[in-house]
Length: 102
Image: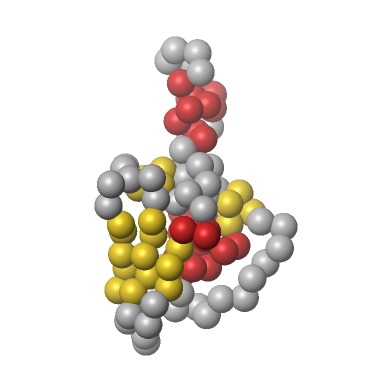
């Protein structure tokens, strides 16, 4: 999946705030904030196979939370020859294996 495809998918499943009328005040905004992905004003060209780097470089994912994973800041992204590491405020590091050609 590409970064743009991921962003589109998250935006498509994000419910409208009107769906939260029967829940406590403020709940909708908290929930929707965790699904927010914004566009950055400056675009960085990234190789298509580096979707995580593309996502963090070209989209504002500072609020995005999926289960226990947060994408905090692009400067927490470490790219090596074999892995991409996300260091966050959690107790562990999330790593992605790079597989060129996939």
